[in-house]
Amino acid sequence: MPEATPVIALHGGAGTILKSNMTPEREAAYHAALRACLEAGLTVLRSGGTSLDAVTASVMELEDNPLFNAGRGAVYTTDATHEMDAAIMTGATRDCGAISGICGPRHPILAARAVMEKTEHVFLAGDGAKRFCETAGLEMQDAEWFGTEQRLSALKAEMERRQSGAADDGDPARKHGTVGAVALDRFGHLAAATSTGGMTAKTPGRVGDSPVIGAGTWADDATAAISATGHGEYFIRQAVGHEIDARMRWAGQDLATAAGSVVSELDVIGGSGGLISVDAKGNIALPFNSPGMYRAWCGTDGVIHTAIYRD
Image (cartoon, rainbow, N blue to C red):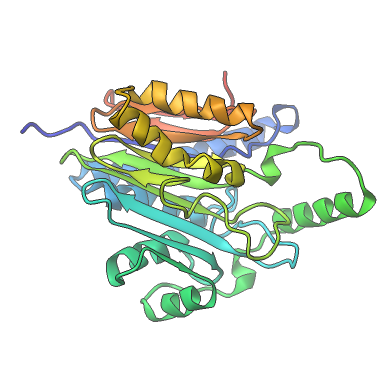
């Protein structure tokens, strides 16, 4: 069986800064960060590594970059605390791991992977999840390490808006911050990984779609690897990852049709956001219905692309 051409894509969330508020300097910083995070995973693939290791590497880089809402730079809850979620899945076996409501592991994606590889479970949450992380050999950080002035200012602004009774301005940057990666390796195997700090000023204990297998994260070699970003409640209701899988598996749709139609249908019910996806043939689909989506990809042509808005 001939080797597959490695392919990788990532997102830094559909919660982009509105184009009218984006400065050239900040836009350049985002493009540089997206490229660097993609290259972390692409290097793994080009050296013969697995898709699972590639998506892990890219998401770790995204988690370390405070431009994105995951790991360092995660947003705050209404209690001014951090609650991070993550999930990872391999398409070869459907093995997966997820973690929710934690603050401590420098890389939440490694916590999710540890659940997959070191336990008999799929999903750990809350205090038990944190205790597991503390004994799993993960690098831990104090809560202060994850915070940034920008995220704290965003929390204060949102709390003031709510207290004043002002209307929601619809800024997607408040609700759609997530990072993720999907990849196809030379062995023909797919993998997906997603990590998030959630929504600014979310209710403590809230869980979005990112760690929910079949909603914000999915991978199966027979269909596709998917990582979503957006208003998570809608993505859970639509079981977005599994819905795309079902349309490919049972309706015979190609990746672009299945992924594109699901995202379009989200828009109809009020769900804003997008996703990244790749299939076993190396096709990539990056649909979104929001003003933008931080994204980067390298397809079978071997060329790295980065983008934020539609044009």
